[in-house]
Length: 504
Image (cartoon, rainbow, N blue to C red; front, side, top):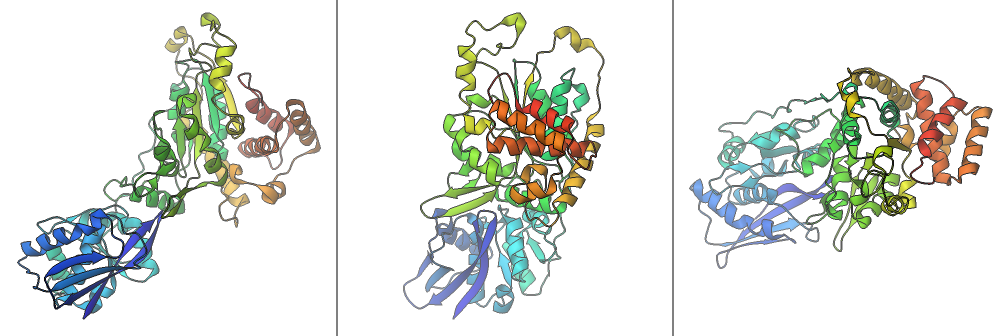
């Protein structure tokens, strides 16, 4: 007799169904696992044996074979412990086979039979819903998986609880979704003294999901401005929250099963490796660009990142997804993020400070900013200089608008874009518009078109640069609640594109 149980193997943010087959046959006593398991899966036999022994369940003196089908799919992770144990218990007639076959399970077993939480409960619940099965997982993962309302989720603390549930002795209640956390952003843009032009750039970037480059002397407030950007962004929509949470679930970043409505804000250090930024390493895990999906990726000291890391950002910025290619797998992760980069104008940092002029200008600035290649620089929609603030201005009272007031305008502009791109699968903001959609949805007056054409010819803009200015002008018109793009909108978009620290 062969007993069957079901679990999942992860491929990016998707989870593929895996059949766990267990056969107990006469022969020399042995416990083997086949089907391309990794080291963690191969060690499951010892954890399962110890967990069953803690429940006074002795394995028969026969040959036990566990096959993970499809056999050519790599199996990685400790979450195979529970389905292997369930298939074995079904083969020993301890659990009803029909109930086990209607369940997708995942969880790690400790030696005393307790179920240890594992990553990926949310994608597993999506697969269970698609196959119309029940999901069985550890209690600590139940709140996370229960967000997929289309699938019943049963969360157990121990293997003994699982046995009592399937034998009808003590059925477990369905798990409840975790609390929706909306931490918000307590940092207010009004705390920043001066920098009105930079604040305006943040508003435009937040409204249209445009990539932003801040260049200024040390201490001018670049990081302070970027830290207040999340307070301008609208909360995640239910679909966006689910997309983002699935990536965070694979990385084990969901706090007590709660799904956050706050947009991600990731700020990796400039010593981060390419695998940490783009994704990869063992098991091809998502990187910072994917963890920032639907949110902000802030890269401070931008030119200090390794050149190879910076150049790998070019393709994810354009396509909104990243393909991690390995010899045995090709994993695709979504990464539609807003890139905010901050940099000093030169190595010493005082190229633009009249009080502390750089003695090595202009070669110092050219060499330092030259670390950012032209194709990468061309992908920044907004580029601004952040001038230093005099220390005497720090004693002045707070001025300017609150983040909440700006956030209302940003949210209104986002709603206009939601209506504009309704029906287009992946287009949600002006930064996503491309091709015929950009042409069809952009109402540009004759004066504005003439100004844009003149600017493109005068400064030698690429086709990409031309379209990016058009998208920024569209966002500015949305903030002004204007149905068409006026010359003033084009002029402002051009002013943010052309900066003295580089040639457009």
